[in-house]
Length: 472
Image (cartoon, rainbow, N blue to C red; front, side, top):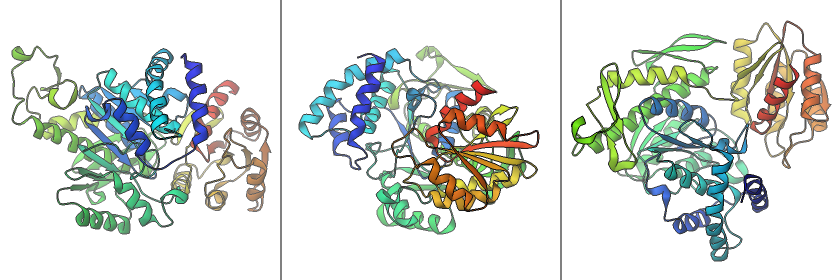
C-alpha cells in the first residue's frame, strides 16, 4: 500500500474505538516474533508531562551516541509524528513499507481474535517493527492511556519505568479516584524494574511507595527530589535551576517543566547505571579489539551498538562526565505544543493542556508570565473532557475576548456550547466556524499589549500552528 492507503487503512480501524486489554496486541506481536523484546526500553506512564520528560531523555541519550526510537500519542503536526527515529519522523515511503508488511499479520490476528487489533494497537506494533528495522539502541515508549491495560504494556522487563505526574483524566476507563488511576499507571511495573517518579503530590507518592512495597520484592524506586532543587530563574526565555549541586538551563516554559527535567535527570542516570551494571562483566575492551566508533566529550568516551548485548562502554564514565551530557541535552531539548511561542506579531502561544491538572498548570503559567498582557484565547475541547472545570479554571485569566471553535474530531464539544459557558462567566466569547476563522478573529482582537493563547486539546494545536504561520 502507499501512504494515502495507510491513512485510509488506519481510519477504517478507528471504528473499533478504544479497547483496553492486551490480548490483541500480544497476539499481533507474537505473530511478528515479538520485536518489542529485542531492544531495551524506557517505558513511561502518567497523566501529564510524559512527552516533555521523554523529550529531555531522548535528547540526552542521543548526545551519548544512542540511536533512539520514540513512540508518542497523539500525533500533533503529522500522523507520522508518533514514530520518531533518532530524532526524525519516518518518510511516507517507509511508513507505507512497514504497514504493507504488517497488514497480513493484522489480518491473521483478526481471524484469531475478531474483530482484531485497534488502530492504536496496530500503530504500536508498527513502532516496534520500525525501531528494530532502524537499528535503534533503545526504545522510549509512552503509554497511550493508563498503563496496566495499555497496548504498550508488553514488556517482560524494562530497565527503567517512569511515572510522570499523575492526576485525574480518562476516568471512564481508569477509575473515579486519583488512587484508582495511579494503580492503573503502576500496572506497567515488573519485578526487577527501576521506577523513577516525578515529584508527585504527597498522598500519591505515599500510594506509589505502598503499592510497590506490597506487590514487589525487587523494585527500586527513585524519586525526583524537590528538596534538592533550587530555582534560579524563570521567565519567557526559559528557566535555570540547581539540582543536587549542578546548574541546568532549559528552554521549555513553566515550573512543571523544571519538575519534568529533574525527573528526566534521574531517568537518564538510572538507565546509564543499568547499562554500566550490565557491562561490568563483559564490556571492558580496547578500541583496537572492537573497531567501534568512539565519541569523545570532555575526555569521556562512549560507544554503543544495537540491543542489550552490544551496548559497549569504551571507558568508565564517572558521574561528572555523564552530567555534562545531561546539562547539554536539557539545554537543547525542544518539545512542540507545550506553552510554545509560535508567532511574534501578534504574540501567539499554544499549549496542549487537555485535562484539569494541565489547565491548572496553564493558569499558573499565565499568572507567572502574562500578568501585564490582555489575553485572547482560541479554545477547542473534547466533549469527554472536564470542560466545565476548564472554563472555571481559565475564565479568570481571559482578560479581553475569546474565540472558540469546534475541533475537527468526532469527540469534539460544540464551539457554540463552549462559548455559552464562557459567556456565563462574564467573558466575551464567539464561536468560529473553523480554525482559520478562529485565528483571524483572534488576530482582530489583539493590540500591542495582547497575547493569544490557543489551548484546550492537543488535537488541534498542529492545525492552529500551521494557520497562524499562514495568517501572520
